[in-house]
Image (cartoon, rainbow, N blue to C red):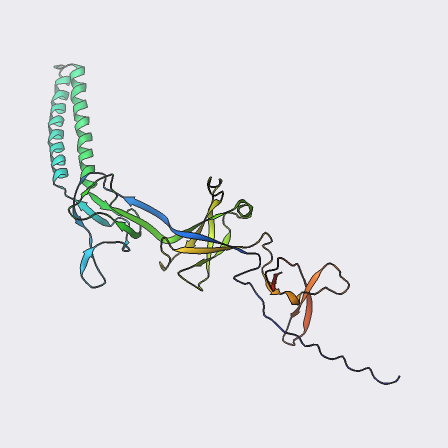
Length: 309
């Protein structure tokens, strides 16, 4: 009875490093399409024959017309129509303006001398102002014969060719701003209620495997699509290096309703604290002395062996 108690044998354990995981338990993945943040179809406001398309130096060192994939700057000339007809219209408007101005000045002098009636003076003034308007419209038409880029971006499509007939009904270029792209995806009503404007979400582009991306929700549709019954959600994604292209597929991961469960631990690591029949805890190695301390946790959904805490 005086013998010392036998030593308690050491309990072998396994230490696992945990953290946020790309596939958190209970998360749901949605596929989305990448779109340009801003895109515009460019067309000539006036009709005419395409006379020239801006030339740039290609990868082989030779000059070529701007084409799909080329970067353009705001205000850069893209194409030009044949200007002969429009210059003739400006010249004709100039001549009519000079004639109507002379008639108006003469009518002003006669009206001051009471040689013509007020009605005749008003008619001369009306002809003069109408000629000014026609001259201004002719100058605008001449300017519209040159097509310029309205924003900094990338040419998605070029439809114009030298010698082809262009006009308001036929877009010549499609340009998109790609510094920021949009990922558009659809979610059911049980998910859209948990989303908020400005919320950040993890995004994985299929073309960039292993590259973590973070998008910010910028638009949530107020109504569901009548056929699919899903709500369209749009997230903005920075694209400073132009690695993301229009039409690429992206996968978006949305967690479960208990978004505070941000860690995943092995299911076997969950224990009951001493004297607690309802709570849960895990042992955490808190310092370099390899001392394990009990830390209470709230558990989430189980996905195979991992469990969210």
